[in-house]
Length: 340
Image (cartoon, rainbow, N blue to C red; front, side, top):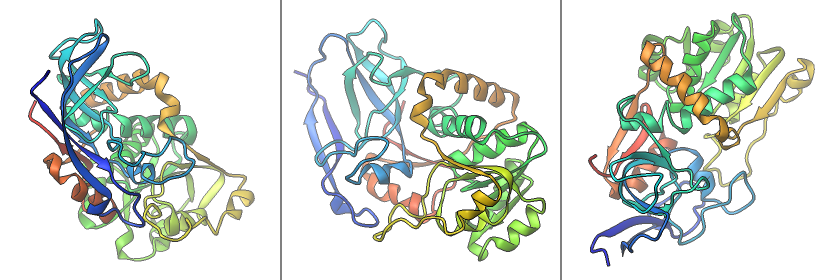
């Protein structure tokens, strides 16, 4: 019997509004010996994503909710420490849905989502950002659903965040005019000066209508929405004929204790014969290698940049998760669990 122990955060209760410490239980258990076909992964970095708040709710969604008492779902990267599978060996760096815990043990089959990654291509946290789920969300959401064309205006909310930052850079790479929406002068400056957006609207300064009029004088052809709520409503008043709106997320609504607010200006879709379509990145999983290869090439060329906000320590998970909804992270929020 292994003498090592594992620590994990389990969902103790379903939150109402913003999650609290009482919604979590930190547990510890011994690591059992591996069975045939299994691998054990030491988790190094966890991805903290707005979608995690939705996974905590009971009810039908694109993915089943995390059960009470279950280890909290999370994407992560780590290193294989033991293997009884011919597909992986000790020392391999891997990504997968390892959850909020120090070690993951599971079958190394096609259904588990376990994939080898190359830490020589990019730092490990970047595999949870531009080369991970946020990058895949940006790549397929913009290209397959947004379908931007050179010369069009692409507007991106949460532009300094993991998905938004990559969306904007891809759109610039394609020859679009790119305008971001972000919270605070520092984030707006980063979006323009570091990521190369043409402009950025600071929603913390007040209603975004004047900024949309100034920076999108010819209207909006593609809107990549990560926030929903009032910002989506304002953008709907500025869309062009045959505009495409990609509904990726609605972080402004995730902690509501009242029903989610729908778009009041939805008739603009009718008037402009526009399309609003939701996207879930898991639908594109068979094509992830395509997205990784393309984004990795752009990384090598320097045309795509990434930024991670790393918080240290598994014990800090509950507080770190809240940073997403308080606007306190700057870049992709990552929790460091252990040294490589």
